Image 1 (cartoon, rainbow, N blue to C red):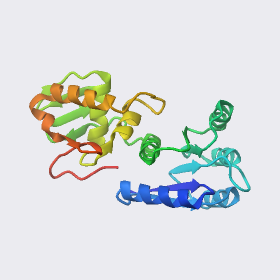
Image 2: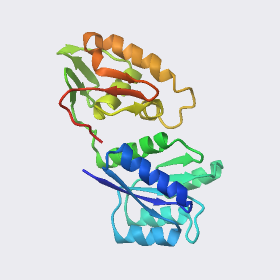
Image 3: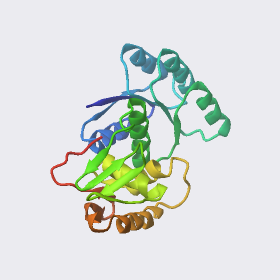
Length: 232
């Protein structure tokens, strides 16, 4: 399944970098279309349905706030502001208009991608109620249970969230930033090295079945299962 994203951003280099990163990171399942000004972006929103809007606030023509308001009047597409404006009042105003999240420039592309992916998945209901399987591991999000080789495994909340993130994206490398966003939330302000200690605890809890969680040097972690395709 493919997802279409509209990026309203007046900086050409930013448009190109984000589009290329999303295409490569998603294996081509996320397509980013771009508009350099607010009026063009509005015309594109009115012409087709997008799965996510990435909106800069300071745009030529119609600004990001006005775009957000117009998009909300037309539907419930997820909206993520990508902006250099850090003022709290701007953020509160954006949330009041119906924005779902913010990323402040300069930002990590990995974090932007993780936030975008999370918003799309939440809007599509892709993870609600689905029992996840990966080799001998079975995770039931609705009931908060995990089994490994048929044996129940009790996991603290963060280890459960990490395993869920890895199982939902099995055979894909997830950076520490992505795992932080998925398990801790976008507003966590600690070091990404906290992931390492929790992965260690997760492996210990899974025992003989922990070998599927691989460390990818200088990148992050992935849950590797033979014969399974990556999921986005």
